[in-house]
Amino acid sequence: MKQYLNILLRDKFRLFYRFGYTFVHESELVEFDGNITDEVREKIVKQFGAVTPFDYDEEYLILHFEKSINGRGNLIQIDIQDIVKIYPLSQQAKFSIESKIDQRINLEKPIFETVLPKIESEIERKEIEKSISALWAICKIEVPLEVYVFEIGLENIFNGLDYRKNGIKANKIQSGNYWEYLIAYDRFDYFPNSTLGYFYDAGQVFAFSKGLPTFEGSGIYNFLEQLNLTNSAVKLPDIIRFLETEKKIRSYISQTTTSNIKQYVVAPLFLMLRDEIRKSDNIIQTKMLKNIDYLKKFEDSFCYTVILLGAFFGFRKFYDAYYDSLNLRFFKTYRDKIAPTEKYQEQVPATLQEVEETTVSTENIENKIKHLEVQTARYKIEASKTNSESKKKGGRERHSDISDQYRSIIEELFTKHSEITLKDIANQIYEKTGQNVKNSIIKNVIMQMEGIEMVPKKRPETARRKKMLTTLFNE
Image (cartoon, rainbow, N blue to C red; front, top):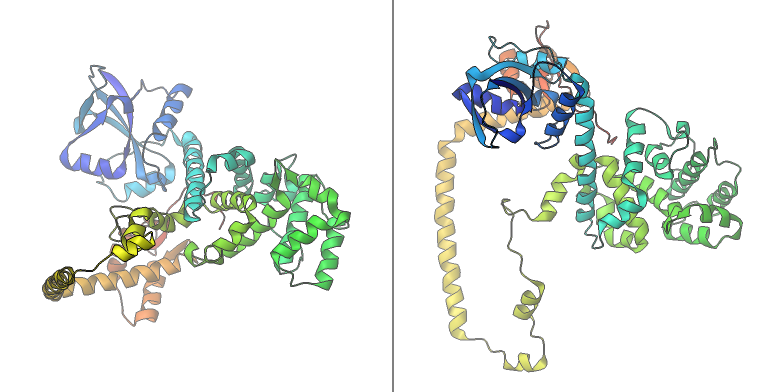
């Protein structure tokens, strides 16, 4: 019998262990003779590219099993006794998983940990692309996205985000592309705290892209300094107009216009909106979306800005608003879309002749009133049933509310700490609610929370953040 490797979600393994069998497709298997070759590593990476992505390295296991397979590309049944070994993805994942599974199960040394960064990188890159298209849809931009992405270059975006992830400042990048400098840039100079200040930032990014330590003393710097002295509250469109009409800085405008992209507009627009989005938990509440029609007046420059913002923040920042914009059919808020032409014809007659010919039947009105009365009566009956059921489930709902309250307090604590004792959590719950809570209850709440886990065998009992995929998106 041959031996194989197969990657499996830990939740699926839990059910596999519970029932003693599961099914996989032959295309998901990697032949394995016990030797960790480059070819085997590459095949494992490829398999991870064809499954559901993950946040935490403990969410997948790699199973080593032995089975006689006919090689016809069929769905095959794997039984629990077929498993030879179980590999976690990392040493930290091994510790975390071992604290939650049957203590008889032996997890092997994570022999594929060296390929984990490559797997994570592929997931992150796909997330960047998804995030860009999501923000594009949220902003309701009608023109094709692909053309604009091509002009900037996805690889330039990836490189810029890699610099940020690795802590490399924009002024330390060697021979990079302009967009890499812009994405990696953060302000460390005392530029004006105003709209005009973002044009100072753009000047600094341009200087770094040319291998210069600063843009101070340049023509564009002197121009901005003079404008700040005479009109520090100048508005965005006026700043752009002044830049494009000032003869002394034509060289700067010329050098920051490439492939018909006005970098001297895109850079300050991106940096300004980036700061604004950083301050908000919900993109819908930002000035960016509240003033979307105004921003669209900047045409292509705004389109390039949206691409950079989408890549910078990542899909997690936007997916709530994105899903709302999609009018998902499985959402409670889903509404059937009515074609604009049909809606128009129903509500507004197109011609004067149609207005004159339109009549309203008394019989139709009476029928509609009766229909509404029936619907109202039905609604009252359903509401009565709901209230009755709510009373029956009152105890469970109150218990759920208390658990949610504890969870909220714990989540707030972990925004400030990466590790905290259960005693400190209990003290915080007491301060917030006046309730004394046992450690066992706190542990039960933590076990139901994503992203937080107990530290195995540590005294005093302590919880910590789980290891998460290194994110490229610095919010």
